[in-house]
Length: 263
Image (cartoon, rainbow, N blue to C red; front, side, top):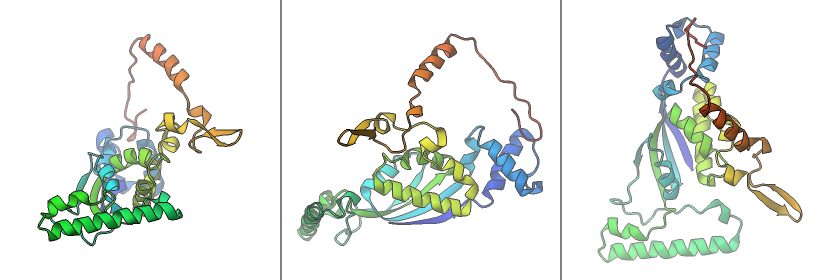
């Protein structure tokens, strides 16, 4: 796998602080000290998230499987351009072996035998006159591909909550960790926005999976996800709060801007 950051929004932090200044009649970010910028950035982390959409990142992701890119493009707020298998001869293309097969001789052998059979069938179809777009039907779905993807910071933040999670298949975790590292090289202040749900919110993104108990060895039961904590189960507290909320009259805040901030 190769992940490269092709471009990102310049002066991103100043741009983000500027959007807040526009909203709150705050100071020009150009006049702020670094400490003041960080203070206002921490404030922004606890307010509306729409300004994060002003910051974009474009990635080149290579030597990954089409199964991974099928999942990636389900993020509909991204933009994508992917290597085509319809118009290109894919005879020499590789196939990504699942990491869980590594170290298992029998699974690896079965996988490579199946790939060899599929590649042979593809080449025979092409030689027999099949169109490339039709011959590709026999190519394994883990065929190697590459894709260019653009996401804004808000989308990346939402993706991270799920795709950094241990429930996500390893290839997507690896790709997103690489994307995250590249973003933080450019914008280290974005770290709080690029965390799994358990770290970002204190709750499990997939509690039915993470909170399930499994016997890891005879007589020893653990949560299925090693990052799950008992205090993440807030169902009783949420139900109590639901009843209080809907039995109460409407509440409304009264925000007043002061020095570029409100309550």
